[in-house]
Image (cartoon, one colour):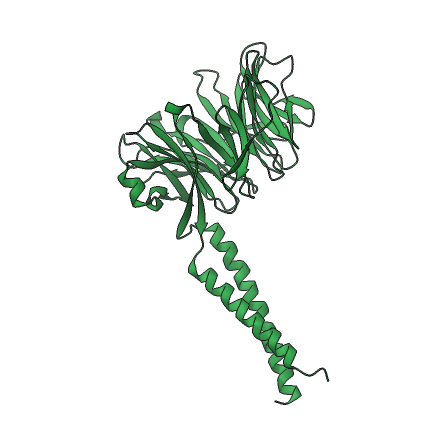
Length: 380
């Protein structure tokens, strides 16, 4: 082959390889953002109250590290390698509520002296409680180390609070009474709920620049903002018109979207939302039925029990609720077997679309051809 033709082929292969790799990257990102075709399912440690074994998973970060509560103590870990977080009192009970990308965990500890908001960082346990608090609990932490939660003050009302590297700030409420901050994203947007001054219903709110703003409801009098993702989309729940039931909801730029329920259901709640806007929680699938772990892509609700194996189903297990989701689409699910009186947590990891693997193989093949051609082309 002439040098000119070889150069033209070399240039063509280069363009095709770059375009294929670019398409692969876009498709992989789209696969993460959309609902996968399946999940690999990992059983987390078994909870058996009869044997005094307890395991609760509360959150998962983008590295796949979980936190929660395991046999009386907060834990963190992944791939079945879970470690108890340090404690300062052997008689202490502890719970991990949230874990950030650096592996810092927040939650609370309980002892004879009360309940205290707690941070676990770099192998240290840090008590966030101070003498002005009767009760405190940390609910979330962002990548900058800002922590939000709740404390009770001298008037005994629960107050939303922000811990900012040693300083403690009470967040404002709409009526000067109570509230709770449940989540904070890396931009510092805080979400939660405050109590209504007339009937003690909770109202969904967010805090920005130390100001509080009420979120629109679905026509009812109560609701709660439970989570906020990195782009500022908020998830939670709201009562519907007439306060007859509750539906999962997302808020984008203050506009509420009713996520609805599984087919035939009349009740739903959203607990978490990832960067792609995929929301997880629980929903009934018939009037008055038990709840099922639910994943919403947009407003399309999917029952995660469709991925539970036949053996588990025949034994009476169901995925009851999905408690957390990370940006890779991994979902933490609580299962329950009513007949056996047992609870079991699972980690669901998405199985990507076949097209993703086909593109990966195509890119590798083109890359190999590109490399081979380069070796075969003379330097002159």
